[in-house]
Image (cartoon, rainbow, N blue to C red; front, top):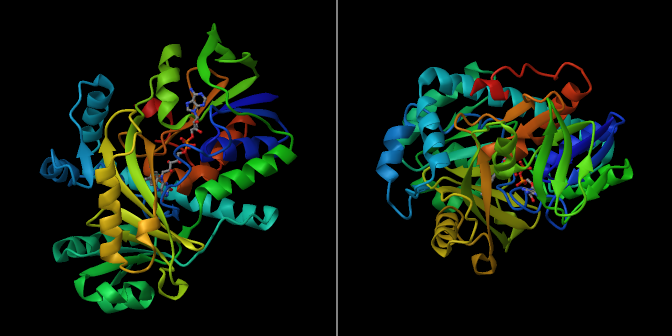
Length: 416
Ligand SMILES: Cc1cc2nc3c(=O)[nH]c(=O)nc-3n(C[C@H](O)[C@H](O)[C@H](O)COP(=O)(O)OP(=O)(O)OC[C@H]3O[C@@H](n4cnc5c(N)ncnc54)[C@H](O)[C@@H]3O)c2cc1C
């Protein structure tokens, strides 16, 4: 069977790999010069099955109200006349119930665990290097009230099978000696020992190279302009070059998936949520962090990727505008310096921003669409790196007519 994958980010490339491994003829289309150059390029680098809880939580509406209009808030809504944003926002609010929060957490955990197992297989089979380290992740709380609530969260996650240790400030500095300088400012932390870190872009590039060896054809610098359906089947992808036909198609265009899908009547509540990162050279390896860190109050993650520190986070609802905002970049640097002063040369930081493809319940959209030969693999929001291999495997399993690999109820488009 010939399968055309629309999008060459971490999601499209992992899907292409599993499809090629199944023996299909695969073609990947992307407008960039190479794989992984948009949202998968400089993300937080954390493979955190433990970060499964959706943003849509019972506490979220009040928190968002407090942040409204504050330019330096970790989550910034720019009130715009954009019907897609308002409709997404209403759906988000509907997901802020305890029951939906719990269900979303359980679904993301399932994906995260499956992903971890699949990535271990890939590392064994393919010998790929991507600054991978497995030493766990630590959520650092500065606010004592936040830490108090976090202890309840730990109990909830432990109950769902995801080990979390509640750590006092001394224990936090034992787990992560890089925090020694700010130990007295920390209220406590939550440690998830099984989490991992790694560079999503390096991984995407390496898997794309493996794909090429398996015969996958990559068409870069190819802008997809439309999808053509005839009766109940997709027959062609229109591009700025030649049209591309296939037997099956996988939609993996990140934040841009809904724009093309809606023209063929497939409604996807995926909306771009802009985030920022900086990447700075580490000055002294001996004082750099070993575990994947999160500053919960500043809403940033801090990750050592080889000899670089990646700091990423914050969220901005600003539509498809991905232009750099120097204020948000400066905020990221300030927050990083406050937790890890002197660890790297912040003056040499490279700044980046990307659009997270977010769904209102923060669970991706996987599997079938209303067209039997169009498959969906999109909407991974803040967890696309943590869920890429699982999502690629699930979609390739479904295309092969196999069991998806895990129970995907609540992950398909018909939930909306
Ligand atoms: C600041 C930030 C930090 C993050 N940190 C983490 C983290 O620590 N851990 C984690 O798990 N996740 C993290 N994420 C989320 C993760 O990066 C994303 O979920 C993931 O990269 C999405 O991958 P994707 O392949 O769906 O999208 P993309 O990487 O954006 O790929 C989509 C591809 O489609 C192509 N495309 C789109 N439209 C067209 C068109 N019309 N024609 C041709 N090509 C097109 C684009 O060129 C792009 O290459 C973070 C995201 C951000 C922004």
